[in-house]
Image 1 (tube, rainbow, N blue to C red):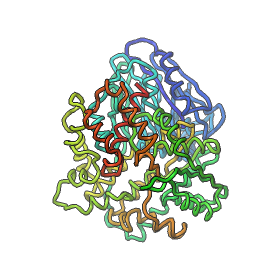
Image 2 (image 1 turned 90 degrees about the vertical axis):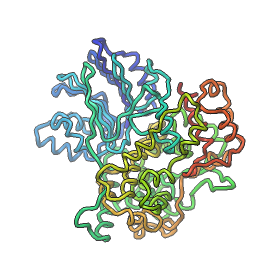
Image 3 (image 1 turned 135 degrees about the vertical axis):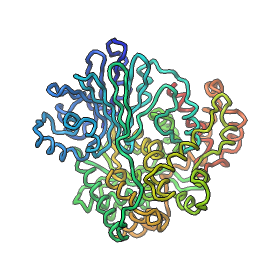
Image 4 (image 1 turned 60 degrees about the vertical axis):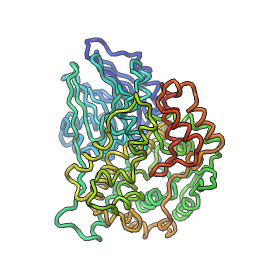
Length: 591
């Protein structure tokens, strides 16, 4: 797990090493263990390393294989690297390191682009083919690891974060009005290739971009997720057992691909509790678990320690829990916003930021439960969508229960110069209509797992943990597990208020109270029910001269929400006032 950056020039000039150094400095927190760079005429790579696999200097990056004529910078973890290593040895390749980075180099040399189909893991990497003078950029199937880039006629630059690209210089601060529409409609998600800045793009999940020294490029998707039942369809018992086996295998692979201890972020919910249980089933006897909580608000409890304590006691874990005062959360809020690669609306960003700060003092890598709700149908809106009439268009069924703002409200909120024709509706309609999904709800769950999750919980986990040099692994987004789950009928997944396959497995592993508890979310009620210092922070942000001069929002809409801070919530229960402030605070911090 690391931070990567680089530049390829198209104008016959040497790469800008000063810009590379600035980008590397902006990525230092992602990779506190070491840093390095590589330059060859028009190409330059920079890397900041967090050492988790093969802790020796032999695994430092950029990694150059002179014999093969390849150079690489890589962020992520390849969970099947040992198996690939054996396969490559059988083909005659020898290795000078013990980690997963060199496996990517050899795999690319052996199989070219087709190597991506063999990599199981989370990754974003850039590989330079010295003989062909060609740069190959790739991103994992679910976009767990980020990859941003900017390109003009002179050069392409890439980095693990958007602020790192900004640090390199030469990027316009003009906003992308299409991205703004996505941001305020899809609960903060901005699907690739868009970002909030018009001049910065991001590589789509499950895609690669190949570009030569003249700027000629090819971008392709190398994997697509099917959401359909096999014929003949297996019975329920067989389906549940195959899901349980796939999850257990994912947990083992995510645990064993490490040369440092791996802990668990234990929220007390079903998903993270199952991770603890399966680690114990795999024979782990020294499980480290970590929980965080906040003070209650009148409307909502601020922690779920009761449930996380139950699981910790049940399995005898070495458990740490952190109760954070509202004053400390308020102090950390600007830091969490500064750690965001893009503006994010989820109220629990600061919770993950503070949890990662504490956990990093104990371990370098953790497992987390992100992805389980999207893959196994855990959110309340899935059942509501399913209950709608099948005669209605899929987009209408989806939008009624998911969109944060309808077009009329968006026009009321955003200043006229930032308005564009509707891009959200056509995108969602196209994705829902793509082949390979048996039913409407199959298409919805696939959309969530492959597109919407990328720029909300997955990006949040990467940004907030890597701000402290902590590697977060997400076994519920293991390729084989997701493909297995997508072959289950939505009706099976939505039984018992959702995630039935996980609940079925949990009944032999976890205390009953953890399984049958009401569905919870990472509680940060102070950012949902805005009062006191949090409301002051929001008011100061939205009334700042920078906000007024930017003129992004219609002031009448801002004033309406400021006057009634506890009255305006989205369909997914986010505070609309917080959404306005979160974007504006990010812009004030980074631009």
